[in-house]
Length: 334
Image (tube, rainbow, N blue to C red; front, side):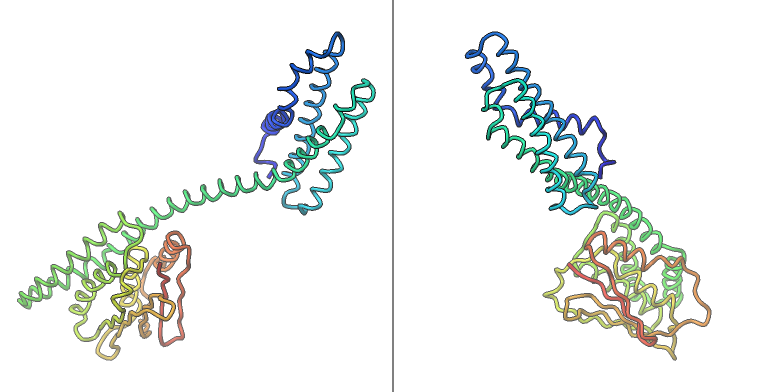
């Protein structure tokens, strides 16, 4: 903690703080000087400067010690040691007053109170500094996370608009055109436009409602069901009253895309993807596991990107459950 502050900063803090402590004496000084004559005036000014110097030194030493020992020494122990240091410097001040034969009021309860206040505030300044630095650290982390979020959004876009997804979509469209299924082709083209429009606009959004994300899933679902015919089906069971819950944009697409990338989908391995909310109002996406004989080539960052975005935007982590037969991803909602 001490490394965060330079010596001149601590010295400036000590000088300013001690000035506030003796401010009542400064305001009263002109009236006192009017009642004094000769060397008594000089003596009174010297005494005030000596007290100001001692208080500044005391604040500098205590603040420096408290910042240095903030994480290694308990508050009670630091407070006790601060009192010892304060009493010592107060005794030095008393000795100076005795040598100068100054009136007792300059060594009385008000001065003692000033030294005591300095001791208490210097003990607490470590915590104040810690709160300040912790807040500054959090702000820095937030800024770093913001940058990471932009990177994650970019990664999410590049991961979704990849040649595999793009060409499969076009192949599906070409197949429909060859079959001359005009109605299905037009619907497929509309859904394809919806999918790409949602993907391309996702960088402008952070959190979206479940209704928006599911509307996108419906378009993606149509394309996939056309592509795999009756071999791939989606079962979505979510009450409309929950549609206002929020999650990061493009949270479901990488999971649905991963299902067909990592699993066999054919007549012998029909895929049923289920999407529902559990009792904790978390979004669950599950599918049976039919692993491909040849492991697909992917960058392996899909779930990692999703995890980082959920931590950034919701402060929560996603969960993955895999029992060898069923693969489930659980997404927290806001």
